[in-house]
Image (cartoon, rainbow, N blue to C red; front, side):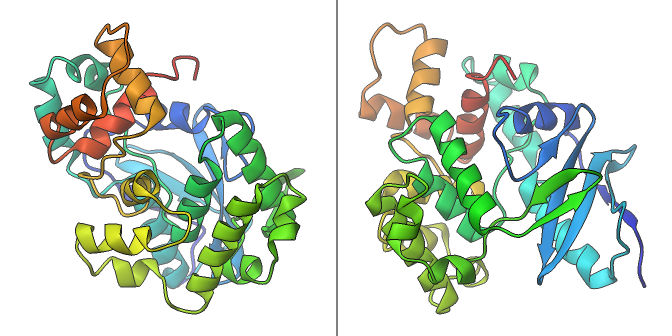
Length: 299
């Protein structure tokens, strides 16, 4: 059966406006168009590009395809993606209960109540974004991602607006580092991203395979990839595998947020940050995400 819209039931706490504010944090974002009350996303379903408009309903989220009718299989694909994107299967109420008992997190879960850990359901996108963001400013990372997507990603124009899907590993595996150097990628990052694409294209790396494994096995497999260190592995577990225990302890933004909320004049040591990770045990990823969110008061 084909249809042009469907709904996703969402369990509280969930605030779509909080999620939209996060999605609007960069004017240079290329992977979605976030508006005041909705977000439009181009879904690549086995090569068919479907534009979905996501908005809030009384039950959770509604997804409308203004230009397409979709099959039940395509609906299942899109729903799975959206559930992972907004982390809708997570028992966030348990995190809130833990955070309410913590003086550092309590004001954050109240200010950003209903915010979900918004991630990257596609493993190649998650790894590529993490590699792009290594050792550069967030604004330049967005610039590089836009160049990368607009150069190699599929697109679709609707009502004068161009929407983009992320480049496939198959496309990027055919490149040479010199191709990405032209977009201002460093030679190392170009090599890392193309190497990851080739591992995925060769069938040696896939999200489906890794989802069957434990967090430790996933972490070690990610670390085996050239260009992936502790921070990147933890970040990808957090943002792609919805692992609430993932903790990017070396993250500069995390250190900055902890320093600010603790009223510290000096940097925290690595041991101090790890101790905070133990304090948030079981929900390190959500604690990190809410601390990151507190750095973006202008969104």
